[in-house]
View 1 (cartoon, helix red, strand yellow):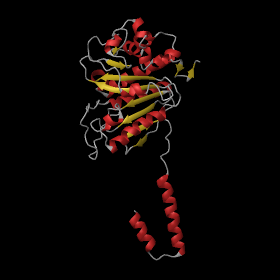
View 2 (cartoon, helix red, strand yellow):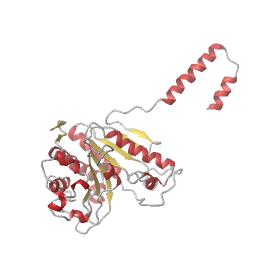
View 3 (spheres, helix red, strand yellow):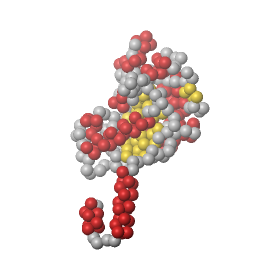
View 4 (cartoon, helix red, strand yellow):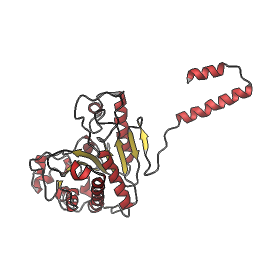
Length: 313
C-alpha cells in the first residue's frame, strides 16, 4: 500500500488532483484508525481475527465457553502440554443458555465464546499454559478475558463457565472450587470452607446458610434436579461419592473476585453429552431448565429479580 501511494504521488498532477489525493488519504487514514464500535446488547463483536465473539448484555450474568472452539488456523501450532480435547458443542450450549435467558427475561446475558479450537488455545488456563507462548494464541486468550472484564460492570455478576465432560455418571457437575473430599464435610465443617468457594459473595445477600446455597433444594444443583437433570452437589448428590468430578478451574477462581477484592459469584458448569449436549432439542431443554433455575437462584440468594430487574438492599 505504501509503495502504491509513493508511486501515485510521484506522478504529474494538477493542484486540484493533488488536493483530492490529500483528502482521500486523510479520510482513509481516519477510517483505518477508527476503533471497533461497541455493539448493542444481543449483537456480536468479533475480535482477535474473529477467534473471540463477545455479545454484550444487560443482565448481571456472564456466560463463557472457553473450550468449544472449532477453528484450527495453520499459523498457530498445536499445544503440546495440557488437555487439548474440545468440549463438543459447549459453544452451542452456551449460546442456547443465553437465548433461553432472553426468552425468559426479555433481556440479554453477556456471552463470550472462544472460537479457536482447544488444541490451539486453552482460555481456562493461565496465559502461558493456555497458549504455549504463541503470539497469535495469546491474542485470542487476551481478547477472551478482556471481553469478560468488559462484561463485569455492575459488581454483582453471576459468571458461568460452560464445559462438557465424559465421565461415567451423566450428571451436571457444578464446580465451586471445593474438592470432592471437601464436599463430604458436615454442615459445620462446610461453613469453614465458605470463603474458599466461588459463591462466597452470596453470604451478604442470602438469608440461607452456605450449605443450602451450595447443595440444598434452592441451590443450582437442587433446582436443576427438580427439573430432571441430576446434578452434583445437590440434595440427592451432596458429593461425588467417589466418581470423577470437576471442582472448577482457572476461570471460576479468577472471576469469583476482582482486583479490588469485591466478591462475585462464579460457577463452572460441566455438562454430560447424553441428554444435554448431544442434540439441539436437548441443548434447548437443558438451557431452559438452567435459565429458570438461575432466575430462582438469584432472586432467593442474591436479591435479584431478573424478571423485573429489581434488587433488595
